[in-house]
Image (cartoon, rainbow, N blue to C red; front, side):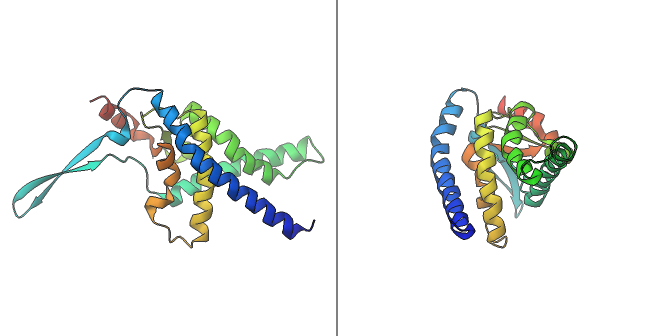
Length: 199
């Protein structure tokens, strides 16, 4: 089997895995969400008063604390990748003579270790440096399963965003958050969001 055939098969398998995960994620996340019976961010509203011609009008909007900073979020992911690459490169040079590429191991670590960090701490190294964190629909750290699904779907949203020459709408760009009912927020806003849920 030549390398081109292998690449086509690998791409096909990856695409198939994505669609299976995408459609399964809906059921899995609904089960995860039903475990808790408290107020949810996705059901909260925010109100804004707008003055027009001397009259005040109050408008209702859905509460969406998600950061729209794509490049900042991507930079946090790249920092995570850089940390894992450095770690595996160091291990590779010090202890192991023949091992898989440290860059491949770092890529795998992004989607295996990051979900664990996000579920335990609410943040990864890159998110910590930028003052960001991940919360679920209840303002808490998401479950490991939810974080794993979110990170895999995020990989595809980054790839599709790059392939589309950054023409995808912002709403579609963060579909992994929307699909898993997770939010990437500023760490300083966490207490405010939790207090909003307790109202």
